[in-house]
Image 1 (cartoon, rainbow, N blue to C red):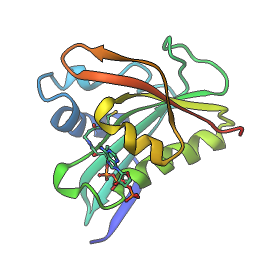
Image 2: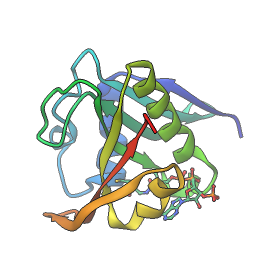
Image 3: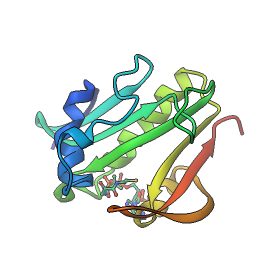
Image 4: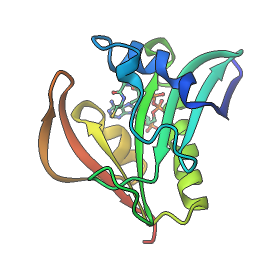
Length: 148
Ligand SMILES: CC(C)(COP(=O)(O)OP(=O)(O)OC[C@H]1O[C@@H](n2cnc3c(N)ncnc32)[C@H](O)[C@@H]1OP(=O)(O)O)[C@@H](O)C(=O)NCCC(=O)NCCS
């Protein structure tokens, strides 16, 4: 299986966001703030040209504001039948590489508690207490300092 990771437009993330991350929400709900910012970047994973994964990165702090050096990963998802083949890893690494090219100091995400182990593999650590996002479930802020 040939896997390709490439940059995609924000609208190309919506269908997989809905299918994998927000099955109870509308496609409109799957548009996130900052999606259209010029500094944001969106990546798609493709297997023989079928879209099988997504991830996005934004210049955004935990208040949702643009802050120099602070980047947020969001909408990380791989279709269930393609998991466990390093596709998530490639998407996450593409986001981190892009953040580094933008002089990021810190990358963070609201990570579902079920995937804390995934982010930890790449050097992210949980910060603070577990918290609930209504309708989605328990999360931790996960972050990595790229200057260390
Ligand atoms: C999280 C997700 C993107 C990972 O994608 P994936 O392609 O299966 O991950 P990879 O195969 O690249 O895994 C990379 C490493 O992380 C580990 N890993 C993957 N998912 C994990 C999990 N849920 N918990 C702990 N470790 C995990 C893998 O074992 C692998 O480790 P290894 O290199 O030692 O073998 C995918 O499981 C997914 O889409 N989940 C549902 C949506 C979701 O919860 N997204 C995150 C929102 S915050």
